[in-house]
Image (cartoon, rainbow over all chains, first blue to last red):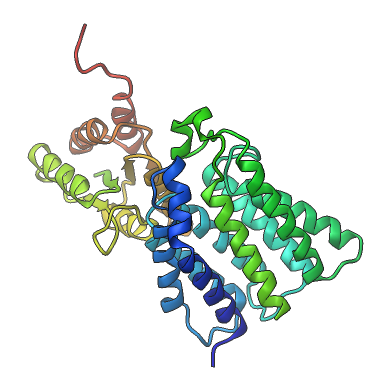
Length: 206
Length: 131
C-alpha cells in the first residue's frame, strides 16, 4: 500500500503533469519554453522511482531530489532538486508532518534555492512565491494557527507573489535576456512552486 | 594527471569536444564527457556529472568545464554531491571550447589543478580576431 508521503508526491506530480502545457506556455513568453515539459518529465520519474511503500518522509524527499537532479534537464532540475534534498534533511527519519517542521522545511527550500540560483526576492523567480509564503506561514504559526490554516495563508501569499512577478523584470535565468520586456508575464517557476504548496495543503486537508 | 569533465546541454557538443581534445591530448584517459540527459534529450544531469567526476579523477583532482545556465548549476550540484568523496574538484569559469583545449594541454603537460584551472580561465575575454 502506498504511504502518505508517496501519495502526496504523486499528487504533486499529477498536478505538474496536468499543467505541463500551461507551464511551458508561460515559459515560452519569457524563457526557453521548457519548464512544463522538463518538470513533467522529472515528476513522471519521481512517481516511478520513489518506492510506494517508503514511509520515511526524509528518504522519499531525498529520492525525489536526486531524481529531479537527473531527469529535469533545465535549471529547475538543480533548483528543485536541491530544494527537495534540503527539505529531506528536516524530515529525516520522520513519518508525520507538524507545523514547526513545515516552517523549517520552507526555510530549507528557500535556502537551497538561494544557494543554487543566487537569487534574491524580487528577481522574478520561484522565491517570489516561496518567501512570502514562508512569511505568511510563520505569522500564522506565531499567532497559534494550526498547520492547515497556516498553509492556507501561505498559499494566498504565494499566489499574490505570482501576481507580483507579473509586475517586475527578470534579472536571473533565461528570462533576464528579455529584461524589461519580461514585465507583464508571470514567472513559471513561481507558478509551479505555488502549485506545489497548494497540492500539499489540499493533501493535508483531505 | 588532472582530469577534465566536459558538461554541455547537448551530448553531441560534449562528445565532439572530447574528440577534439583527443587530437591534442591522445594519451589523457581522464577526459570524460557528461553531455545531455540519459535519454538523449537536451539538458544537464547533476548525477551523471558527479559520476563523470569520479571517473575522471586519478587522485590529482578534476576540473569541470560547463556551457551555460543549468550546466553551471548542475555542475555545482554535482560537486556538492561529492562533498564526502575527498576529490579535489573545481568548476572553471571559462568558455567551454577554448577553456577545454587549454586545460587539456595544461593537464597533459603535468600541471597541477590550480595551473589547469588558470589555463582554462585565461581564455576568458581572449579576442579571436585581433583588430
